[in-house]
Image 1: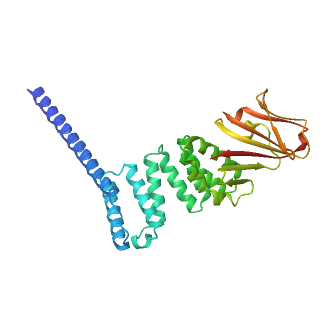
Image 2: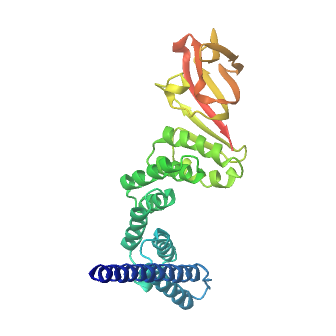
Length: 302
């Protein structure tokens, strides 16, 4: 008789636990769905030109994101998008009227990263935010992390190019520019053209918007082995120009230890070779006499 009572008690305990679990799961699902609805509603808002109405729309968007976060506080996208809109408000000089601070942006992006550390976009956005704040150490940290997480995304290279050109690390920026051209493939002109003003302040890099060329000049202490120079393992066309102090006995491009092609003398001790799509780090230059070398240029088209 006692055994039956115990079995019945266990059944009620088990049934109660299942019921509680079901209610909890149902509550979680409904909360997540409701949070998603608030999130989608926030994203669907359209801004107007009138400032007063625009401020009200921003307030409504922030309120909707707050509701989403309250109902589902483990969704990294909610924090990311709220940070995006706060950043947009700053760009429109509405931050004071909306009572938001730059620290809010940093906090929200960091929260998104903590929840989903493998999403490269969160690192990229936080890195670019720090770059805009002139916090270059943290900018490099997060932009580099974004690059490690998604090394084939052209956007990471574009932001890194901006970073390296701003910090006058021109060779690093040029190498990232090669990656950018490779992964962007098409429609590179508009984005690279936007770098023209930044490039104008550099000493080793120049841009010709009409010919759509970007040139990097090596003035001294440069290696003739492209792998040692850090050129990427990418198949890209590259124009190489060599400036000599006097006539050269030998100037040729080698692929490893094998002869690949000779440079053409275009006059005034200037030599040129156009390299087709090959892995750039496979090559090296051999020159005789070595002390006759004055300058070398890498030129890429965009």
